[in-house]
Image 1 (cartoon, rainbow, N blue to C red):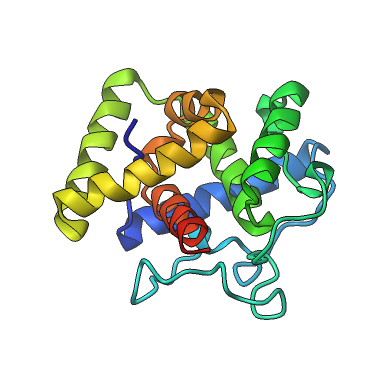
Image 2 (image 1 turned 180 degrees about the horizontal axis):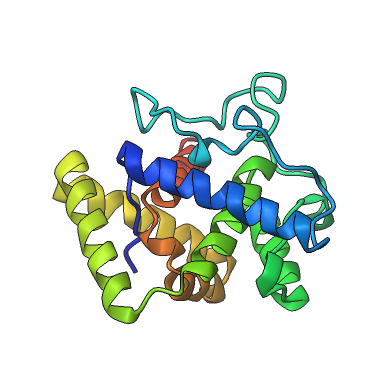
Length: 197
């Protein structure tokens, strides 16, 4: 499994715009209970600004610095504030909360994953489009990290996900989340933080 992402500013802006549109749609259909997040409150992967160091972790930030990127997992799986929107599947949400909790995923990262999952499901990309996206992202990350570091980093994420559930890997592949460069970077940072501890 290779994770797939796009990280240039235009793609980040498109993801952010799609995220905002999805939020407005949810609100208009009375499916969302939370108010629309402002750009300042949005998960880091949906912000338009590009961090000068794309591998800079947000896991060490305090909740005051970035309330969405809490550095620790909650006390129980039920504390994850996630929703799979129009593609609501209470069984999947329950499993996702368990997966997130088992690996100790920060609340902000879990929320970003569920939001991105919703966006990816709305895109309904064909198998050919998913493969093209995967290859493009893999080429970019290999160019940035080098082949050996790419394999090492992706291997750490795979191993972490295998410990949680093979279903988590399948979900990433089927939803296209495994193609999302921001998701890959977040998962790599998280896996590296687990290895360091």
